[in-house]
Amino acid sequence: MNGVLKLDQATIVLVEDDPHSRASLATLLESEGAHVVAVADAEEGVEAAIRETPDALVCDLDLPAMDGFYLIQRLRDHEISSDRTPTVAVALTGHTDEAYRLRSIGEGFEHFMTKPARPDELVSLLCNAIEARAAS
Image 1 (tube, rainbow, N blue to C red):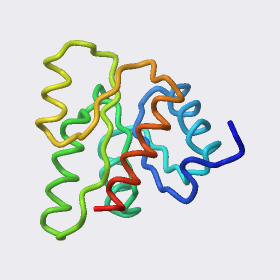
Image 2: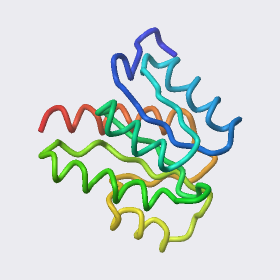
Image 3: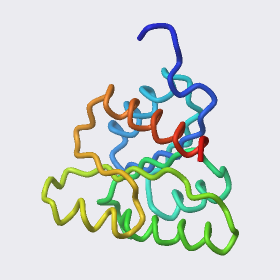
């Protein structure tokens, strides 16, 4: 790190069911200055995203009970009905096939990243996407 907090003041909702992955991703994002709300399932993720109105959402697709596709559909429906600017949304998954990437984009995620996420790539992606959203 070069002393500049790339995600300074950004609020990010992180949805990851694996406790170790959730903790390490939260630590990474917080080390770049983000305020992170980390939760373990889709229902908590929807509630956090509606409550926090975050700058970004990072969501595992394979979650217990309801998956990340359910979460993004619920969030996008809420944003449309509330006339709210769409949250930057990153799908995070162990699936590497093109069909998963296309489905995630079609369902409402703007970005797709395979696990394990490369820390610099994730931070850069979030930083650029949040800046682009703010500029539009």
